[in-house]
Length: 270
Image 1 (tube, rainbow, N blue to C red):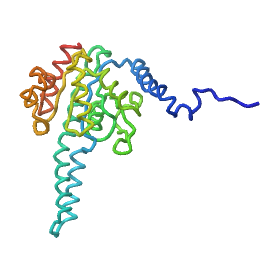
Image 2 (image 1 turned 135 degrees about the horizontal axis):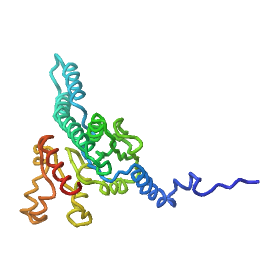
Image 3 (image 1 turned 180 degrees about the vertical axis):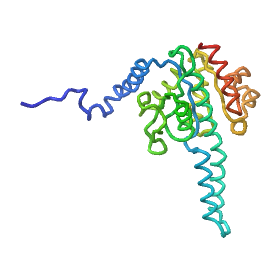
Image 4 (image 1 turned 45 degrees about the vertical axis):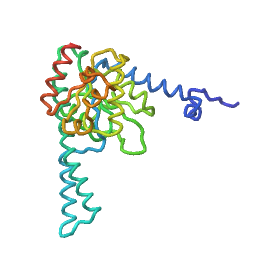
């Protein structure tokens, strides 16, 4: 007799274009079951560059590079390498700030009297600023969440997220849904296209009232954000309202960010 294979056990079918909606439902349903099982209702989402490293690592890389260039007249490529390494040291400051802020928020959250009110640090689950935020939560003795994404580069899962609470996604739009669905606040560190995509989609959803809950947004690092975009210029050109500038707050140090978020989260959710 021929043993027939059930459709839901057929890997060829499940990985086919015809089963795409099933895979999408899996990425919607599995995290939901996990969060309900662990009574997780609130997250503080950290976004930022995957390319940043700790200050220790960035400093070691710069020292090693300078040593390798000793006694040489630098050519164009070597000068560019040196500048890139120096920028990496500058960016590393934000890695450490993300780590420290996540530590502060996790420590505060763990002291809340009702465990169901707790706010979990949530990141994209990869390296860089994502690693820093999970690391800070871990060093505070708390659990944290990682929403990893399968990519051909950069995105190996970091070691600091809580495995039982973390998920790997294939579909960006489902990953974005889970970032937004549980988030009670957003902290955005310097980053590239992915970071900006995530930030501006969330701000658009708030602006258009697709997200109706209160979600304080912190843009961390005045030098970066003011250099990246002149938000006031968008108002002057009439492409956003002046009130849209209230969607976010630019902050430059961890204590200011922590105090602002603590006040806002307590006001709206505690």
